[in-house]
Image (cartoon, rainbow, N blue to C red; front, side, top):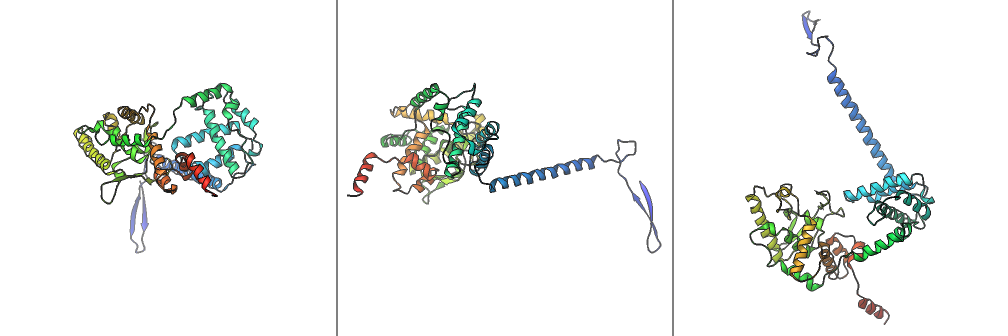
Length: 412
């Protein structure tokens, strides 16, 4: 402590004490500077983070203002295309897959410009990468080529390239006849999504009028999910994320639709907090009796949760009640469980559809909707959560008889 005297204007002398902080554990009398140095290092780190953020924002702004041209390297142009076209509105797994392809292009196509690309060059680089690895349909090289093919098709669409150097059947041509035969056999054995007959879809809908368990809601979870899907055609991942707060009742309060704003990631077990397309939408309405069944199920479920020590909050509608460990974590049923229940229902109804899944129901509902909108496919596409091009390609199937009738009428 230092004492100094100070003389005021009126001649009065005052004494002032100046206290210098010291470290109690330090007997050498040195000043304590540890707190200052800690504050200084935090300040330096904050300035560094701010500088890095400015550089990153400036870099993204540069990328946004750039345009792909033929003098860019493949990696630079792909990165620009990914940032501008693909990054926004894609799921986390899709973004990760595209970024992995970017690393592949950075390593094997680093200094190659777009104008120098040719089929022979791409084939050699891909064969070099895939040497000793799998060449199947789900292999890494197949996914990289799908992304590269989409990028080059975009360049052709924007008239950056005259043609896509990757051929149509590149996997069969580049990786041998054995792979091509295997892919053909896999496609033969693979059961695609089929549109059910009107009598079949009607029998599945009527099944839920009398076949829901009255007292045990844990046995009705998968059936409720199928009942929702057979009327609305919602994607399975979106059904898993549905909550009671998403229900939209009609003016008479006797029918309900759903507001779709979330989806479930089955692989990593978390909610995406976004739809597959990135935009929210409302669905088709459930009929009166199905709405009553759903509301009654939710009331039973809340009582069931309270009896077992859980608080019934705004949890998923198809909450997993068979395993309390999953119930506590608010995890919905898995798609495999719902598909297995759907196959059991088909066996009871004697439909003989061994490979049926929830996507069959979505495809059937979408196809029925396409035939009821009188050409207003934009409305149908919005209700099903598809773009108009995707909806027309997947769900609008003109009959050959109608095509022939229209062509004969054209100039008659």
